[in-house]
Image 1 (spheres, helix red, strand yellow):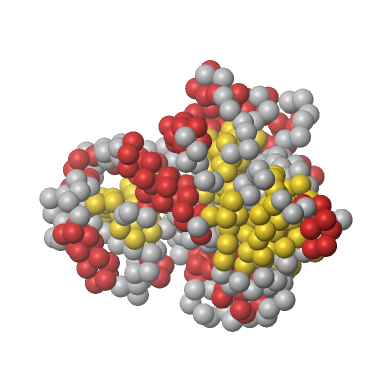
Image 2 (cartoon, rainbow, N blue to C red):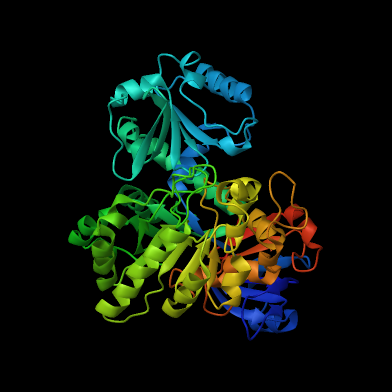
Length: 526
């Protein structure tokens, strides 16, 4: 049966029909877009009718960078995201331990840069309150973790344990581990953490989907692995998949996945697999983003490139992925990391046959002007997360100095230079909340309230630019602009209703806007 959706302020994201009133859908597709009168004439009387009540209607949001299963699982774990004091940190860990009879205490989301003393926590914060149970708590960027002595003992980490390639075991002045592990050093512990059961994973998927849908997100680009993709596939088969997923697999798994002919396994309107992700460096908050110049607060530290970027394996894998027409999606935060990745992209273009590559660099938080031009020449997509600058703007200058802020979260500069930008959250690094992302992209306010006119205000973008980056340009970033990202005939019937017209209200009220309805595949989600 046809469905008739009337009386909307529909911002289609189409150049040839930007604003209209009505939509007609059939099954999961849009079959008409136009005026109320024309829609009524087109649909006829034998259809279900829905009234948008003159509210703003947009295409379903697309979050272009999430860790979906990590996010779903995190909804059941200890969340320290709002903690500002050591005493509160310890209290929450203690209470969680007493209330949850688990073998490990897991969770995190802590950010030492918002603590009162702005110092990294240590195992001593945990040992006396949880002496006999291992604890593993990740920093907000998921590139640093705090563990207690019991976890160090289980993992066999001592003062004599060397740093792994691409990681760091932080030690005190006496050479003893502090409990802080960075990047690949975390793997020494995580391999000992019991994996959730299949039932727990499936519950996490349901929780993650509910979180996405309540925020108007109908599609995601998920940094995932084969196990989770297979679970998504099973959910799809039993009609339990409620989020459209573009799966992005780690480059370290490339050869194994190719040997299985994995990327020809399935591609439909719900599940797609054709992208490979690599890491070039760490994060600014962990002092592991890789720069040409050292950190202001650690003058001997330039950051931490990944071992496979340095030893040439990244180039080898990247060439192989591109040869197999797999999109390259590369995490690069520091200016040196971005530059090194672009070097490899340039070599790929010279060596491999041409095709519609759509290279992506994830985060692009600190970029040199010359590399913006290189991105443009190579048609590299900037996949960015505006909500991260809400936190970063509080402390970035202390880490890299005022002079180096040029090119930091440079959304407007990238757009002005013709770079296509897509936006996301990097959930769980920031909330799975597109309205928050739009608010920060447009206003560039920071968590401490110290920048009411915006942090680096010349990099503010418009509401129109932000929504485009969460819809049609986000669809382009996964080669799906022909089926989603705008409200037009033939595309999937995914759209949302907002409480207010985000285009017309003062920008300082964007944060008040709510997603009132999410329509997925032509059905209203309760």
